[in-house]
Image (cartoon, rainbow, N blue to C red):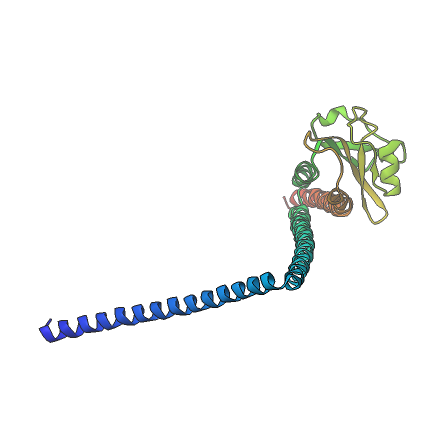
Length: 271
C-alpha cells in the first residue's frame, strides 16, 4: 500500500472517530440539558411550595390523586393480565383437546383400515384383539362368534384367559346373549369380573339385523380405571366394522371351501 493511501485511510479513520465523538458529545449535551430542565422544574415546584403553603397542599393533593390513578391503572393492568392468563390457559387446554381428538381420529381410522385389510378370519381376530388391548386397554376379554349350526355364542379368541375357559352362551340369554340379540352395547362396573357370563362391558357384533357375535370385556389394564368417550366410539366402530370384517372372512372361508369341493369334483370327473 502506498504512503498516500495509508495517510488517506488514517484520515478517514480519524474523521470517523471524530464524528462519533461529536455525536456522543451532542447526545451528552442534550441529556444534560434535559436533566437541567427537569432539575429546574423540580426546584421551581419546591420554591413555590415553600413560599406558599397552599401551593404545597395543592401539590400534595395532585400527587395523591396521581398515586391513586396509578394504583387504579395497576389494578386494571393486573386484572387484564389475569384475563389474558385465563385465556391462554383455556387455549392451551383446547389445544390439548384438539390434539387428543386428532390422535383419536387417527386411531379410529387405523383400526377401521386394519379390520378390512384381510379376509383371513384368524388375522381379523388377531387385529380385533390388538385394538381391544392397545386402544381400549382391556386386560381380560373374549371374542364370541355365533356358531352357524347350533346358534350358540362360542369364544373363538381371547386375551388373559384361555378361550376354552369361556362357556358357550345361548342367544338372548344372560348379559352377552341379550346384548347380541338387541344390538345394544352394555357397560357396567369397571372393577373387573371373574364371572365369564357377566362381563364389565359387552359389544355386540351385528351386520344389519344379523347377529355375528360379541366382544366381552372382563377387566381393564391396571393403568386404566374407567371407559372414556373414545372407548365408546371404539365400541361403536367395533360393533359395525369388526362384525363386517368377521362376516366377510366367514363368507370368504365358506367360498374357499366350496371352491375346493367343486374343484375336487372336477378333478375326479376329468381323471
